[in-house]
Amino acid sequence: MIIRSARLSAAALWLVLAALPGAAWSAVSATDKPAETVEIDRIVAVVNNDIITRSELDEQLKNVRAQLRQQGIAMPPDRVLERQVLERMVVEQIELQLAHDASIVVDDDSLNQAISGIATQNKLSLAEFRDVLQQEGYDFAKFRENIRKEMTLVRLRQQNVDNRITVTDQEIDNFLAQQRRQGQGADEYHLGHILIALPEAATPEQAREARDKAQAALQRLKAGEDFGQVAISASDGQQALNGGDLGWRKAGEIPSLFVDVVPQMHDGEISDIIRSSSGFHIIKLIEHHAGPRHTVTQTHARHILIKTNELRDADHAQETLRVLRARAQAGESFEELARANSEDAASAVKGGDLGWVEPGQMVPDFEHAMDALQPGDISNPIKTRFGWHIIQVVDRRQHDDTDEFTRDSAREAIFRRKAEEEHMDWLRRLREEAYVEYRL
Image: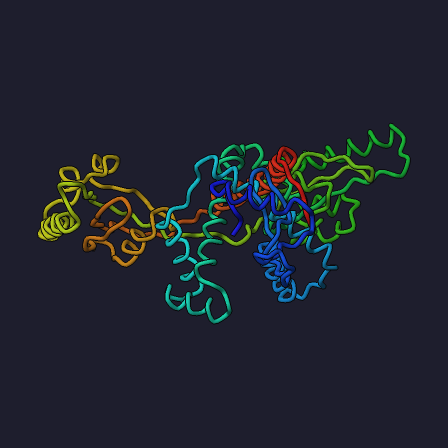
């Protein structure tokens, strides 16, 4: 483990011993006779008031080499790899020092929850997960501390970078418009097309005549004439004899001239005249098929919360909720019981009503208990970090949230991009301001 500022006295001693670069530390007998040289460890970098040792660097090199072999990546020369790994350790050390100064601490409860989550993602119990790590040669105590370190760095980044980033609605609109222009949308469009062609190097008179012809065609369409008939009689396009039918086009297959126009149109709508070097165009959006829809199961739920304190322990809270549950099942109004007894001030005034809840909106323990209920059911008392609850499911429904999902996905993509750029700038500033001395 890298020695922290809390061990400055030891670090100072190491700095003295390592004053001569590359020198090994030797055990010398009491009679000053040469003894067998035993290299214990040495400093490879000084980072502000902390150090990085050779053994720590070797351990990281071992891990990185194993990872590269697993990924099938060719191993760089030892010197290059050593320098890269050490630089990464230096930057990480600077971040950890800043986290220490900012009093960012990951407590054991948070750490245990995170490790349990990792085990669950791998469909293992915590004991099974520990056994698997040990079988693969990983020390569980070191694994825990590595996770604690990663959580510390995440919190540091959130505090110094993520919390300062905003994504505006205009940025989301621009992002989605760019996706449509680049053909990354999943929508499909059935298009009709009329072209009034212009000869190459057309004269102003020829351009005026062509525009008048296009305007006349547009007036016929606005008067209700069939698009196919107008295309057959007036269009110079290759699909004129097919009624100007361009067929179904994915977003990426729409001609670039129309890519900003078509996605803004409604089914059956006819565009204004669009000018290009080849002539004057009129587009009809015959039909539009949206991409895959995104639906979620929403649950309309109510709850009653009882908190524990110095005067009310967990047993008392559970017994109180069991009595309230029995009264509700006997016919009393859940809403009135919630108004009179729930300690969730925000929902109590609404009879415990939480509204329509989507997956991931509630804490996991609450959500698991709620999802196990049928409409009308009331749960047994369940515990979350907020206290003890009973939950009533009022109703469930399938909700199409494609628009919200699309915008949320765009918001997340923009946020990640901005956060990554800002994080790189922030790390560069930290690195430039730190005192670093290499002793490789």
